[in-house]
Length: 115
Image (tube, rainbow, N blue to C red; front, side, top):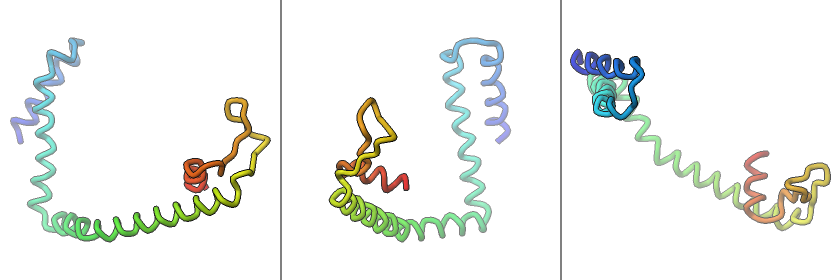
């Protein structure tokens, strides 16, 4: 740990002196090793290990929820495209043309997401 911290301090000296970033590029790799200190914390502290395990157990369920939500957005976008494709907003112009928020499926998805 001490070596990583000392090397990261040494790597800031060229930046403080105003030299180009190419000369200090080798020190960027050493800075990346600071991430491994956080991984060591996850291994040592049981509460953090349990938290990470719980997050990985919930991820498949969250994926299923995201798929269901995406399917609902798609269904409503198709519905609004069929029902409101001719609706034009006269007050708002995009590049000089009237805006049709439900003109095609892509715009309907975007409009449903913005709502």
